[in-house]
Amino acid sequence: VPELPEVETIVRGLAQTLVGKTITRATVLLPRVVEPDAKRFSRALAGERVTAVGRRGKFVLIVLASGRRISVHLRMTGRLIVGRGAAPETEPYARVILELGDRSRLCFADARTFGRMRLLGPGEEPADGGLGIEPLSEDFTSESFNSMLDGRSTPVKVLLLDQRRVAGIGNIYACEALWRAGIRPSRAAGSLSRPSRSRLHRAIREVLAEAIALRGTSSRDYVDADGVRGGFQNKLSVYGRDGEPCPRCEHLIVRTVIAQRGTWWCRNCQRR
DNA sequence: CTGAGATCCTGGGGGC
DNA sequence: TGCCCCCAGGATCTCA
Image (cartoon, rainbow, N blue to C red):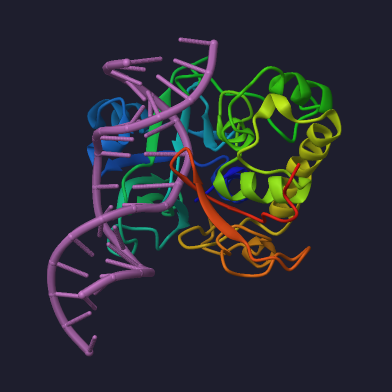
């Protein structure tokens, strides 16, 4: 499941290989994963030059010379692979192929087809419901996070996953940040003490930065734009580790469900 | 406004 | 060992 650190790693790779290249042809193999319709999508992209590649939350943003952008959301199993070998014959589950001027290709592959590739007009934003603050930006201060929690009865984990508030945190890093901060995931957000909020704010920034440094977490499908796995899966403290001892206190990690999502945590040292 | 639940998909894990 | 069934999981939409 690509979250902020995985998307950031992909984006850094794409920036190296895509910028300056021209899209000579766009082939849509599965029409329902693109917007607008496949015909308009491929017609609009032919001849476009890539000027930059960026990220907003979990969205990859490919900036084009015309001012339009392609947004890509990988959801669960999406991949973006660049190379000469990135073709329908060699990439399983290829959904969209962008042919580049130098005979290489950008392939959007996705087994479960939840991912989306969307052409955005100038000024158009990638998420329909809007995106919240970037957790690694200067704007994400302890103060701004603190006021985000005020008066909210929703479980703090649900709040962390809400892209309209903080953009880019998914299930893995929500679980990991809560563990680092020693906070029970089901705890009502607004009921957290000020020191707890501050610890959580810090934990979020730390875990995301560390994961980026290790090029993300490869639990199953994720690989970067060059097809390389990340390294943070070896550093996970709780995610996916039910039945194993907590790295901090040795109590067994449990898996519960919050808002239909698997939630891994330590009953002993996440009591705040 | 807030939250609960359904929806979309399919590989692979679990159960038998 | 093999087969079938069921379900995870992010965002969005509907409904209460």
